[in-house]
Length: 91
Image 1 (tube, rainbow, N blue to C red):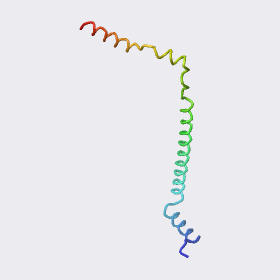
Image 2: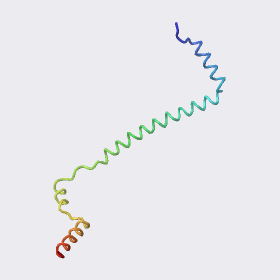
Image 3: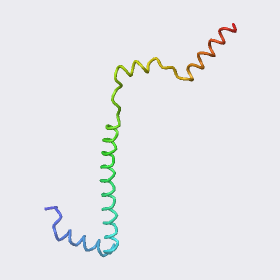
Image 4: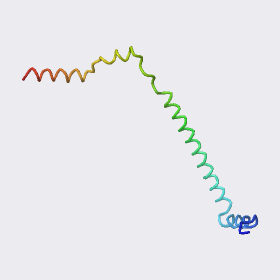
């Protein structure tokens, strides 16, 4: 019989209303509701972002293109190779 009865809860509610007032409680309720709404939106945005990431993942290149690009020389690499050859010629 140590539980809280409905009458005790009502008395506590009346005391809270008297202390804070209805405007302040309404404002706190609106703030809490806005926070919950913002949380739900951010969770749904996160799920959408994950879905977009999965959609953006590129398919692997077909073997024909992969072999074609493997022998391609980048300008910077060609310049470095030429510089090494010139250094060898000087020695």
